[in-house]
Amino acid sequence: MPPMAKNRFNENAGPTQRQLRVGELIRRTLSEVLMRGEIHDPELNRMSITVSEARITSDMRVATIFVLPLGGKGKAEAIKALARNAYELRRILGKVAKLKHTPELRFLADETFDRMDETHRLLTQDAVKRDVDKPADTADEGGDESDNA
Image (cartoon, rainbow, N blue to C red; front, side, top):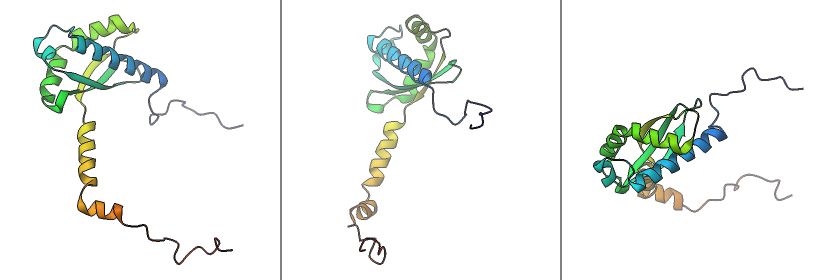
């Protein structure tokens, strides 16, 4: 019989199913609220903001929301406008989500697209293209005799 684990919660483990479910509920709800312009802030309603991800802590008390304004311009202004309206967004989220505790909302700019652009730029460099397009030399030239037997 295998020994029992002292602590079944591993700090390095990924999010639980509940965290993923609640995070997706938060992401979807905030997206709909921003799309419909339910927040009474003309500056925020002028922006078209994509809510790409919501990560929630294991105690469900803090949600980090990753957002990106359309076109990627004005990230700082979008974050400030969302932070300024975090109380109202949290209140609406509490009505819709019906969670025991509505998490505190923290907003960050989503850097995923910037990282994808940088990766694409690196892969299109001549030196990298040359290495990738290089014909695969037979790696077994001096080697594995067991295939011939």
